[in-house]
Length: 276
Image (cartoon, rainbow, N blue to C red; front, side, top):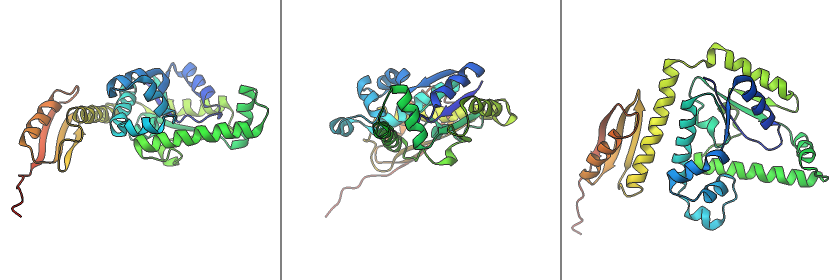
């Protein structure tokens, strides 16, 4: 089942490439507008708040109120849930970053120089002034960059995130589709038992982090709790001054969907009141 992650850049004809791939490979195209409700529900936020944040349109007050770490966890979880289902093309949200280590996922960036993008946008929106088109594109890129950096701390223009980077000003849409389809048909990007485990471990880790964050938030104390997952088995590490947190964390993680076992390496640090 093909899984493609693609960066969304305004006026690069990326939508046309995605549509061509969906038609050729029978993929569902997903962008954040389609699942903002699910992310909002997971994060305990209003859908409109999630939309404005992901679009880089949140007000100063909204940005101050939003728990970026929590939103990052739930956005990551939503992307990984989609990828596990397969037969999907996921546009945007840092999906290329989150899925870059999964062997069967094709991470693609469709890009183009500014003059080309200006012409595309002017034709689409019947804009007469190049400066207006350039301003709209620059604003969209800046908002996208800001959101991805806040959620995942990455530079989405880093070529190492992608299996393939295509310049749509030089490579026509149909040829872009052909190049990506060839990768999808190659042995390199076929789904295997091991690649399924790699993806599932990432999803389980995302679920565990979300569960821990929802239950404990920032109130764990000391070093907090971190998790690692291998073949469905979770190892918890960190430090806390509350023994009950260790017991509760292990019990909580045992109940997370997909977890095959839990090992605690959390250190208990006794709290001693100062005598000074």
